[in-house]
Length: 416
Image (cartoon, rainbow, N blue to C red):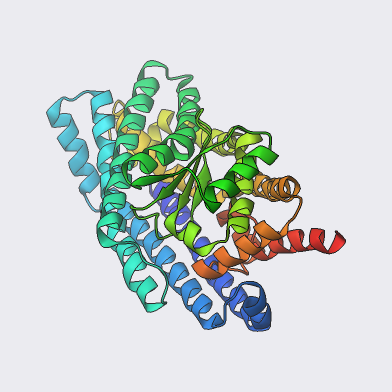
């Protein structure tokens, strides 16, 4: 079994080393690019102090790498330090059954992850952003938001653990199909229903029924041939202080704009942002984007199916082959690096959709300037990394880098 352990640890650590090196490379690449583009940053993004972007990039990269290594260390300690054996013995003693054990096990894993990363998220939201002079959410709103997200993660993990464990035990030859279905459902819930829940429960929404903002948004919908929307402004929650906007398509034509978005952008710039978001709704980008997600999930599901059926998966850690719930958890340890390394399959379609949404906004408004200036303002205000390395983009970006988007819009302006 030694070779299997070496392979597992090598895959986990090797993948993390790759992403650590990539993060360092990305930071160094950006340092050079920022130094050569300080004038552009000031004129186009309104960033008079490029050092703030440099510090933000370093902080984001450092915290992301730290979080990943802590999760990896926790996973290795769970596998080789005794907690796994303790959990297996506990489940065996309780006679919960395979499905109930799978539900509990995956809930425990999700809860452990949430507790592990919570201090890093807090440090990033308050300490780092305070040192950099960036906007920070109210403490109470942030705490409530994090609690809701952790609860959603725990419930989602429990439901997925129950469903997949049940399928793997009762439908062993085809259970991976259910796994793919769960991925699709998770994407829809995460991108459609969760924003609706967050909006109604956490954001303290305030209807906007008249005035410049409502008129600007309504004009966009009219130009696009859509019914007049319901417009809301978030006045609470941890999203109110971020420049955030989304358009939902659950039959109500709902547009949600954060306080910061309304305060920082002009009505014309809001039109550019709303037109971009409306493109995703009218062109079905959410559903089309499932192709990339499912393609990535199919690879992971095939690997999981093989590992759950392999006797050596259980023998590595002295687990009985009948403990399917434990086999799934062990299989995930092998599959997680594969998911990280195949991220370009998931990201490539969404990057293409973002480009099309920018083009849609330009066409609907017959002018690229509202979106171009809005993107520049948002990027500069949030200190978004303007110059990521192209390989880093493949693995981490669902949107094209800001300079590429501005360049595409500016080219159209010059040609016009």
